[in-house]
Image 1: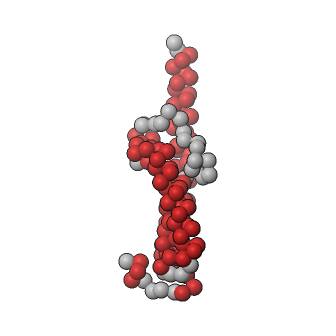
Image 2: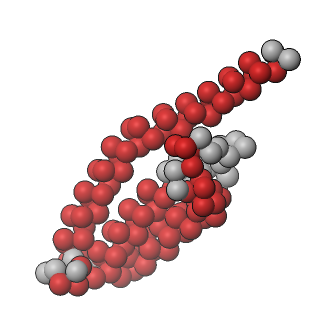
Image 3: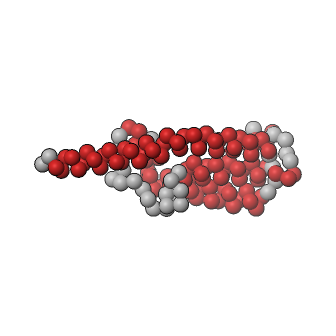
Length: 126
């Protein structure tokens, strides 16, 4: 579908596109590797928590590497093909991700804090 959109020469930037694709895909793939299937696909929403929050790469670069990595990949694809429509869709996705992070970051932080409180309370009760 993107290739069917109007091409604009000034939006065609292959070097920047390949850079964004490389960095974006690195963030996405390494975060998938760090989280595994359960951590990647909303395991924390169903009470399946990791032993502790992941803080190594790529989470030491950004708290949401999949969001930022996929946004970079979307923008890279739009620039590779020189399609302003792709840039517009990337901006829309970026805004949606920003909205999601307003809920997701505090939620994730709170579920780990809750588990820690419960573990401390359990140890005191023994």
